[in-house]
Length: 266
Image (cartoon, rainbow, N blue to C red; front, side, top):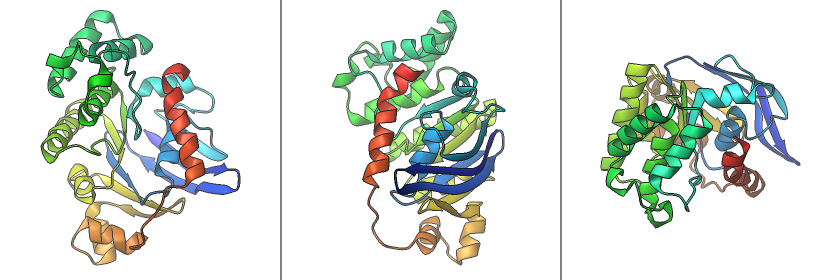
């Protein structure tokens, strides 16, 4: 479903992604982990057509983002790390607009929007402007929007950041059920190592990225065995070190600009 070979991205003299390769099978849950500034979000932006690679090849559901952006975009849904909703629209209008962009038939789109808004417990607020929502409410709405058109791949860049444990568990229960019943491929990043391990059970895989390179890959059990640790957090720290990381300012500026342009470029 996702094939990446020799993928590289440079921002001026900064090498954000350094010749990485990996595959994600259809129906797989794949955790893409790493410290701040490791290159995860840059990679997701290239996979989702918002950034052009410096070199390397990507294939999404059989299509090349460099030559067939429309086919690639129709194959996936995405929840960005940074907010990308239209604050001047209501929750319902945000979903309705998304359905129009993706060519979802109106009746089917409305049925799906109602189902998703009830799932994320925003049905009673469907006619409220998004600018009046809390951060957690906006996150839940972004997840609903990303699933509206029944994507084959669901990209989630730190989807549960800032959410309480109850909401996190509820969302992951739903996503894992979608993965099971609709064979949707899930590609996500998170800084919650326990979340990554639970989401990948029983057979999902993990890739750990640091300084632009993939430094380890396998199931959570394999990574814990490799590092001789009993938790994913300890395995992660063993592989990446304990030093506090900062985001790379130049790359992050490019990525945030890309998220703001998302609606217009679709």
